[in-house]
Length: 568
Image (tube, rainbow, N blue to C red):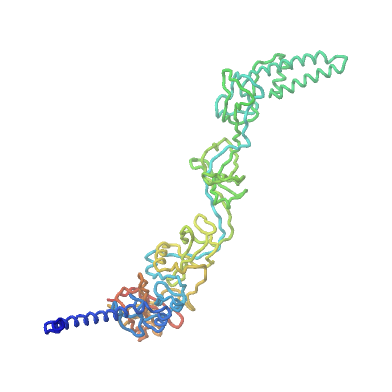
């Protein structure tokens, strides 16, 4: 009964529909499997298989470098026209990335006919004039360095005198009674009452009377003993700093003084005092006066530790004073270099000694100090030619014909307007001194710093032209397009005469953008007479291309022109 129902005429159409739907789904699944297998096929290849494919391929897609073809055509993904694969050392090493030829316009490869440095960049003459680029020749010159330092006038520490008493007592009267008072040697500073001094004076008077009485004694030992007692008492007074004049007065008057004057042992200026009136008690430990002789002074310059290698004893120096109106510049020599560095200022004191007639140089006055150091014969460039990144220094070498090359150098010394170069540069090479920051930005944009190395002489071809001496005018195309483009141009010399018998080459370059590799298109133009050159160039995609037109005759570059060509 069930079998008959399943085979009934009503159930047969439904069974056929289900079978048809299953067949359709299987077909769709099989088609999708084939499609994705083809899409994923290149990624499933081994590295060696991929390399063999690339070696056999002559064209690739610049937007999808994994797609290769052995014949021209369009990319199946983005429909962009295939670009001819330029074999390069990077591709030969198996890095898996197609490389287009390097540009001839802005960053010139070393293998070109002009033999430019691999990291050179081109700056058109019009652009040089616009940015104000200038260059000078590096030369060997006698170099002297000026080291400027701030300084101050200081007292000569070898001419500072401190006044103390040899006895304890009480000050009676003070004559040097203010700071800054000039005193002379032998002038009284103050008077002091000391019981020890009074008793010693009295002992001296007694010894003097005894000597006068016993000098005529018939016993020689007694006479000699009285003389020895008098001499011992006189020496004790001298040890108390009692002058010979005061001792003579004591002998003449025969009366002991209550207050004894204390005299200055030097001439100078009172800078400190602790001796006051009204019976101030003093003892030998107290410093009563400080007297400074200012007939000679020091100028102490603060030199930073990185400049110390250029300072030596006996070196000439100049000292001037910022606030003086009539004070002339003083010329002296380094007398002493301190063996210590101030940990706070990181400077070392350098001393210069000067006479000070009329006390014109005041201690603690500010001064400007200039030390002159002769560095001998050195390779010198202007400071404007050197760019300092903080960790390295570099210059731009003017190679001629509009080419410049960044070069690392080492600076050994710095003067007011020049740098001494110890490594990376040779005498006679020209360095750019103006518009360096613009060249720096230009070279970094062009990637020139990636190949920047040590100093290597670079020639500009076998027989280069010294300057741009041609006039090049593009006649065609007026509006470039993607694909083949006819190119015509007219070349004239400086006199306006058409130039024939040369070879012309047009090179279009697009730099790398993101994952898209750089692209280059080239075309050779033949001389058609009357200074006209004609040919064609194949432009792979719509873009504004950096365009270089180079005119050669044999190995000699007669001239070049750099412009932009937009393809739509």
